[in-house]
Length: 137
Image (cartoon, rainbow, N blue to C red; front, top):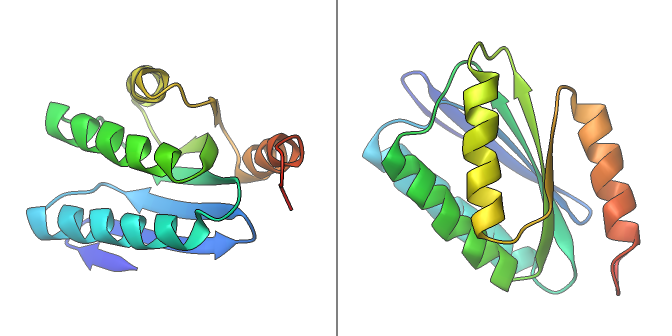
């Protein structure tokens, strides 16, 4: 978990799903720590198919730099056995714009993904998706 002014993120492994909660990633130090934490957890999970469930809280549209960063980390995760992403957008007046950005990001990485309005639906979709993968838990 890391906090920087109004920035906040938390990453937790739950079986073969990485739960990530984010509220505005701002500040170079916070973004660098987020990137390193994501690399560390990706390397821990790479031994079987896994997926990420990312919850974005609050209004947040990605800057071009952040969008590029998410593409880079997604490509790294895909090379390390991540097979899908579910995203939940909460309390977001710009959800339509953020959803378009996410579609562009995950499509550029050929990563299956869906956007949900609640965490339970996202987790159910990921669990079902992972059951269909070879060597899934």
